[in-house]
Image (cartoon, rainbow, N blue to C red; front, side):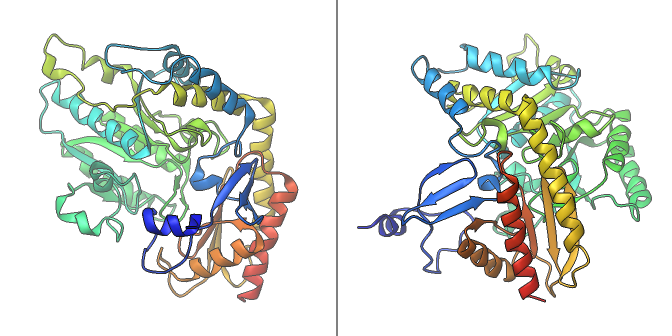
Length: 424
């Protein structure tokens, strides 16, 4: 059997309808921003392989950190034990997070990082004997993951429709705009006055899976400030926006009012290893300190704080903090802005949105949804040209690794322009 035949026989792929007989592309190796497929075809990875490869593929600095750690300690139970990679990574993260954050809790992916944040916030109130604060405020069309708690606080859609009867209800508000902000503030304040809200959860500045919907930091900042006046726990889901994607280390760096909990994953290890992190303020941690064992945070994973993943994350963060990487982030943002200006007035372009290294182009189609078939046409067109871009319905986006060169970025822009021009 060929690899393709074995894949069809053995594997169930994510976010993929299994009826069409479309064989997945087999990648043999990758380097930098380039994927090398069986048969010799190459692809420029314009989406950092689902937003995780910050520094490109097979980066030697991260690979070396993992290899060195693997010869020392690959895994140990994290209940009652600890190790240097977890301690060093936590210290590095806290060094670059604002003062309210004090404790790092490890998990294994973005969905569980959000689950942990929700459970921390709810048990924060429960441990104080306040049992009526159980409601969550989130934004409409949000995406926070595929586990049950994360689905509950996400927008109701075809993705979670089979499970809707089992999901808990939340207060969902539209993302703020200049036009609706006063109305949203009034509704937000009304919800806060009910005194049943435990937490306010949000994707700061950019709603990723919703189609890279972007909104102003000033609006979010005001909402966070309002929530914190009522002692509501504010949770920033930075699984996608963290580690430089918005132009700063974290999207919350654009805010004056900092959240109480931040959820991190995706780019944290530079794409090498699965890892989730939830960081909380000291006031939350202190409510779990008790002689009563029932106030323990009963949450964990077999691979919590895996030493290899922690070593990879520390190496990736060290690369991120280097001057050359920060300049690359700025360079990509500037290139995006220039390209956006050249296409924003095209009749087939409904709108262009940009925050840092994230560029989104909404095509002017009759249907605006994830299931718009133009995504399949565009996806195939890009693959034929040797570019990996995975549109969200009629929204094309680029979220490249920071190692992407100007020439590679220019080629991606050219492929997008060709598609838009041919669709005029």
